[in-house]
Amino acid sequence: MTRKLTAEFLGTLWLVLGGCGSAVLAAVFVANGMNLGIAFAGVALAFGLTVLTMAYAIGHISGCHLNPAVTVGLVVGGRFPASEAIPYIVAQVIGALAGAAILYVIASGKAGFALGGFAANGYGELSPGKYSMVAAFVCEVAMTAFFLIVILGATAKRAPAGFAGIPIGLALVLIHLISIPVTNTSVNPARSTSQALFAGGDYIGQLWLFWVAPIIGAVIAGAISKFLETDEG
Image 1 (cartoon, rainbow, N blue to C red):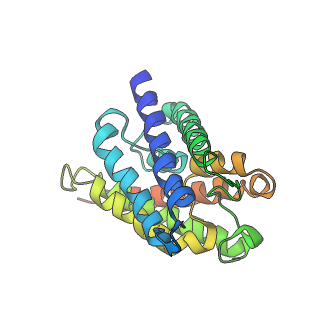
Image 2: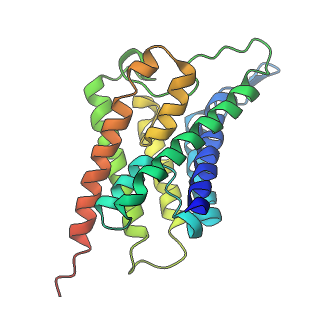
């Protein structure tokens, strides 16, 4: 179990450092009067790459959840023991916090550093596109549900072996392309918690949505997957 939890810690750290790091350090980067930033598409790709790389690095050790919602969805879908869910979630949150701390140290080393939103998630005035709470909630439920449907389908016994990391990583890219303007994309309560605690203020006040909505989405997906995978003979 210790090996699994260490893998989840490291994997979630990498997710936050790579994904949120791309948003904080590289999304908007101006040098010599030129905008050399990677913008939304680059951030979306970075998040997908973190999951893709870790799927092959630690998937054989812990399953590479990196996300409390994924862990819950796998439990509901009958793919993961409920008794291990809480330790996994704790390891994921601690890993996310460690990733955010490393990112903060790096980001604050730049002259004129301002913390700002620190890639945190939000709705209303904290939404990149100023989307409402209802829009943000529906978006997070839907995006997480489809993310879990992809995960559960790609890792099913009858799915091609050895390729799961590719559709899962690409699904996360697509999810970010859709929802960065709405919520700055969570679908991951650990990722949201780590950034909100550094950004502080209203970001912490809105954190509840980025736990509740992804978990609801994960539960829905777990139930759908269980139905789809039922052997009717």
